[in-house]
Length: 334
Image (cartoon, rainbow, N blue to C red; front, side, top):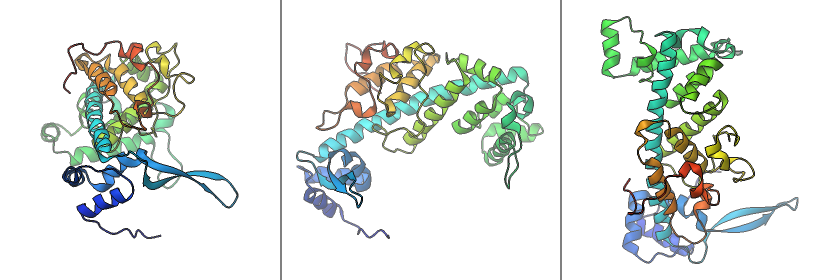
């Protein structure tokens, strides 16, 4: 089926929203919001306010469907509040990821550099599967693919240090330089291929007990980083790459995330808690946890949706990971 909905002017968009039951008190404010964010983007924040219905298919099964009409009392201002909250959340996530990613890359380079300046080229530091030929049309191993992607990044890079290595050396770069070229996804793949002893040493620097746990957390951090960097809706997103839940014995500070105490469906809170834990090992963490807790505690008071949509557990602020309480002298500016 081809898309057939017509283009609408701003006034027509406002009229359509009102026709579907959305309360819009200030036409000019609504027009400004639509011009700034767009109808489609705002629709994502209005989605929780739409009416749900039930359909019965040919086999008699009941299916819940979301209709185009809005619930009584739904208004555009509430969606704008959620949008503003989400923007602040994304900025906090990007800040946390930047601090952790740089620290992780540095640690990885330090551990591998102790083996050899060019350890990343040496199959001996990786597990067998990472270096084994693959079946199919492209038999290159994961290690060979990773090295090819690295060469591509070096070729396309406009960093002055890359030009320096081209001009003064044979182009080979030590691991402590290489990490400055890598995206988090490439760092994660490199880490995943490491021998267990090296991977465990890196993980231990962040008080993460196993390689398996760190691999999972890296994937989750990379996922929310991409969502935030592309300005996509984050606050009530159900995680595709959910972080593995550590046992209470492994990571006591995150015991509240274990199955039975936390929702079975993974919300963004899971990654926020993981980031808070990882940042405890980063000296420049400063007050990220304080500001994040303040933001979550100030979730917009809108009808029909609350901070639980993010996957927060009851009494989350009493958990050890958020032990630094909200400041008594008021919110901290992001």
